[in-house]
Image (cartoon, rainbow, N blue to C red):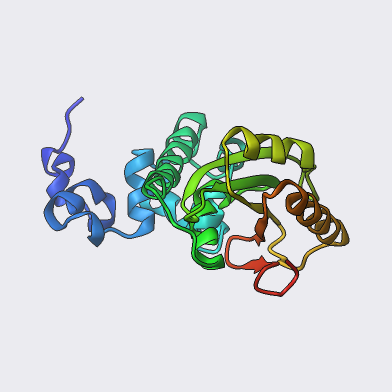
Length: 232
């Protein structure tokens, strides 16, 4: 069997068929999201280029990379041309991006407002499909000493044990505590349980001389601060 060497030369391919060369020639910023996905998956199908497959995947999540990061390997394999290995490549790349954000936030951080809290905890809670409860422990200068995961639950809620929260704060000799949990639904409004827990934690913190500085309800695009709303 013979091949037409002209058709095998990557420089003769359509631009959308060679995102790797485009990256080398023009730099990574020149590539579209679909082209970057195409590089991750390597190949398309008999009828679709790798870039076409990338466009289909993005279209399914409204071209929102945050929504793409929520997808599991199983979710991704529902798309044409995406087997388990390719899906794993996409999930792995997005997880590296999330960890990069987490590393950037790992330097000593001083909390001065609710926005600082939101940005600091974002790498842990962004894109999660379930609720998690975290605490941020501060020293007397309001510099973060440690952040701790307290519990992980379902879509509708998680359990936060005040005894566990204050145990961790006392072990670290923290001077104050910030509570954070996420609402995967995107609704920032606190529930009756959120309000009750915050009141209980505030009272216990006052008794132990470990004040609760804030309780943040985190969503991917916004947040609610009990302190900002005058509820602490």
